[in-house]
Length: 250
Image (tube, rainbow, N blue to C red; front, side):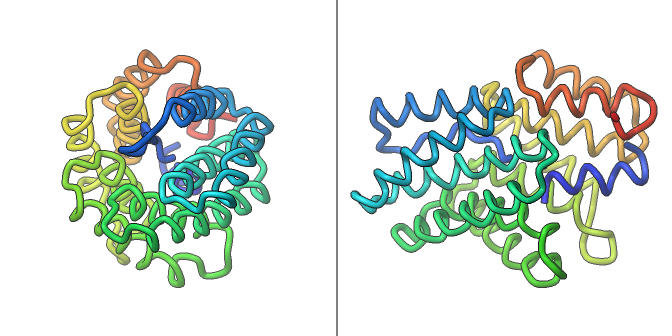
């Protein structure tokens, strides 16, 4: 969902869900994988992410643990971002579908996990633009999962970010609301001020403000995101879109 929002909003003025991605019972190896994967995501390194996903998938096939499926879903979510940067819509769809499968398994293993529900909702959102009638078929499910995550853990900043993206993606007649998106994104920043989460919130605040024709605010927010994570290709992509004056960044 998040990456097509950019194209949709581009038509008027100019999606990762990022997350810390560390489950409560993470091990040293988990932290290493997440750190490597985040760096690969920042660099839009498709091969690096794919290799890491395969490592986690092999562990999941042996252990069948909740933590491994959550981790796999997170890495597939990040692969969606890399695929967007590389303009590979086929890979983006494949990553979203694989991530949904992993997230669904995580939800089955722990139905009360806000992280699992958030990832499932976010990945479904990423898939929507790449399937026929995706909004009608999967939009309600995506929103339901995100709101479940927010209910299970009212401090899950990533769920607030993804729910805000859904507000940006939907036409107003179907519940879209840019002002509600802005409120949720600001809330996410207060819930988790760490750079690993707030850079994503600032990116989407910039897109929301730009869609509302508040150029100064949009530039301020994307500049903040750039300062927080200057190495992230997605930040640079949106920075160029917003500051180019043309809205498409190409």
